[in-house]
Length: 375
Length: 205
Image (tube, rainbow over the protein chains, first blue to last red):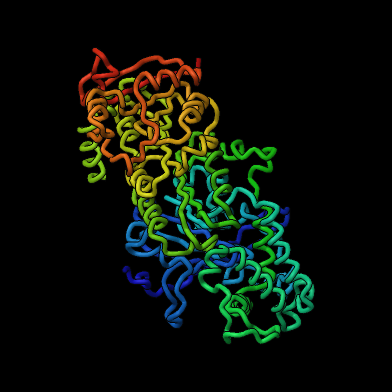
């Protein structure tokens, strides 16, 4: 077993980008901060850089731990580190918190210098394309002219895909994991229920809850509980919780009775301390808006014509939120363009969350693919 | 990479069928290899014929083998067809020693004809005289090219040269070339009796 903390102590870094960014929505951000972490060493050719893009609730803290917080292991520590599938003995890996997030990059909870107040609901909508642009700014800041690979799962996979379209000459490989080229109606529906939970919370105050010294806890908690259900599979929930009762018998009340209730409520509560509701709203909208084929009358093959990178596309059999069919759509469009692509469909019981799990075959595929990337 | 190159040349050394297939492939072609295993054939064709292509494979360890070999592979069940692949998008579609293990035999030939300009199929010839002898002695054949027992074999649709040619007629496939081998020797005389391994190149009628 590799040491789970092989990356060791890490420290976030900040960069202030003082260059106006025109967003897809038309809004302009005059300047912004990005927080990021790096693992491994950039080689002299600057040819070994790998960008890891995070999903809905992720952030820049991909691997390692913080000095003062022994339990603060990064969200993809099983994948990224020395000797791990994305091997930081070979690659210089970068994790960045997306614009609009709530872990250090400029977002709704940040202070707008023009007003001296929190951005709140005034923070502009951000899209996957906008994030790629900010990531390109960070790359420039770090002196990286081309990524050896851009890697991401779920919403992160969408960013990896978008990279190949916006900067085809600046990315050699894209690893698109448990992702989709667009959300289905069902998927958007889940996102909207989550948003409605937040937007209708009486403590939301139109997004200006910071001024009232409160949080839309109830709404964010419900949003997270709903999300969690969709990230797990029926099978994994059944095997983990089944119909287990906390006290072994019905108590005929609305407090926690079934273990699954306990789990979801705990996850929901924990999340309200870690995540900003406005950021959650923005991230889910970015998911909904993503659809590179839209500008091509829905023709994904035409949309991916610009791509030049090689691809590894992976999906998980029990992932019903980002199902294997959606990954196969991407693969088909890549095949139509004669792009180098490999596709693995991983048998897993853990649903969408599988992409974060330590599955042997999954990690072997990523390891084998990354090993063949020349730096 | 040194390790996989060694494995590869070892594989090629005892697989004269690779050379037989390569012989039919125009340099620079675009190829789809169905049931591609660890990608050894595609890698060989890449080295010998400078091809571009993809493999299709269902088995996890084989898919992993392809990635290790640096070969494009799509993990997919051939029995569900080739819907990811556009009509007429390949120069050659290869089905190397996989036909006999498939449920949807006619369907895969049809799909090969749809996706590729030409199809190439190889299979162990059930009509080979040693196989016939074993049947006459009262047993299902077990041999180098058919290494399984009747109860554990993945080969559910074994056929002879004659049987396959009949299937081609039914599928409107025009046979362009046939090659019958016994180890590394090409068999000209009584091929359905003397040949162990059959190769066909065909196109849409």
